[in-house]
Image (cartoon, rainbow over all chains, first blue to last red; front, side, top):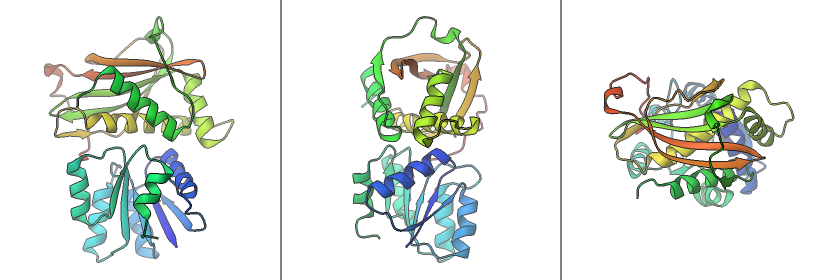
Length: 119
Length: 158
């Protein structure tokens, strides 16, 4: 399956990729985008089965990326991995069509739990 | 729940362990902490509460964190900036939820200082740690009311 990690931090993309592996999700094709705009271009050009996105990014935020995808009719499974996990953000994420919101820091166990049944 | 020094320590050490996997031991404040060259990574919070969450790194410990994360003996300056900025983002994002809201979190800002504390505002909480034999400080700085009108260039996140 094709997984896309979206985060403006290279360090965070590396951590998400590492945690995916530690959670037992190795063997998938994992790609990276450093901005929401770059992710949008990649998703328009290729089928992804899961998008793991940061929320707070320059140019296009994660919630803007998700909203744009849904407006275009793209129903890719989408989850947030972000430094904030307030009730308001979780509600906004859910209403926009996200399947989960994982607050950093997170463990392989919490990532595995969030992805249970999605991959 | 609100922020106190114990919570500040717990949030910071949890982030450190989960993201970097290296020990961060509680310690007292070093003497002349701001008098030497250091790196500050911070996020600003604007809204019902205005201020800054910042982490003070020695250049040595910042490079150590990048070396550990990237598993490289020679991380680039950009990689070092990225790691220290992301740690401020995670610690600040976690603390933001404990401060009065609604509020907005900035993108991380990383600055180098040759010495001296240039932070605008009052440190209402501070915790010091030791990592790889080097001091690491975390501060919660509240902006005075007269300073809250300035434009931070913040981006809305919630």
